[in-house]
Amino acid sequence: MDKNGSFEDLIAWQKARVLSRDIYKVTRSANFSKDYSLVDQIRRACISILSNIAEGFERGRRPEFHQFLVVAKGSCGEVRSQLYIALDAGYLDNDTFQKLHGMAHELGKVISGLALAVRNQRDAGKKKG
Image 1 (cartoon, rainbow, N blue to C red):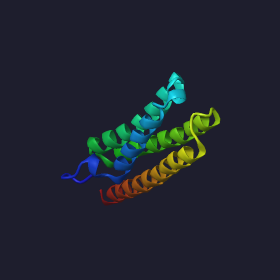
Image 2 (cartoon, rainbow, N blue to C red):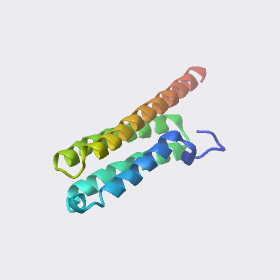
Image 3 (cartoon, rainbow, N blue to C red):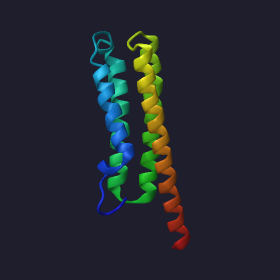
């Protein structure tokens, strides 16, 4: 939450953007694209990750940023769960599933680390004031 920085500088947001791009790409494939509800749900979950990181950062307050990161991490888990559905439905081959699932899992860890750092900063600020 550096006054000179932006959410686009955050590694978590950058990784979420790549994951979203790749999810959009695979959901355009012939079979997957016909499952409108799953396509909509997994895309919305990816959008939620990006949007919550950005919105929380832009609010400029650590408590709010932390809460938005918690929501973003939850959406990351939602994406992973939906990837299993896509795999089981035959929309993804195992290699694509493993790649996307790994990306989402790593992103969840990055978000967790960022949330922990923000929480620690927030709590340190409470002790000072």
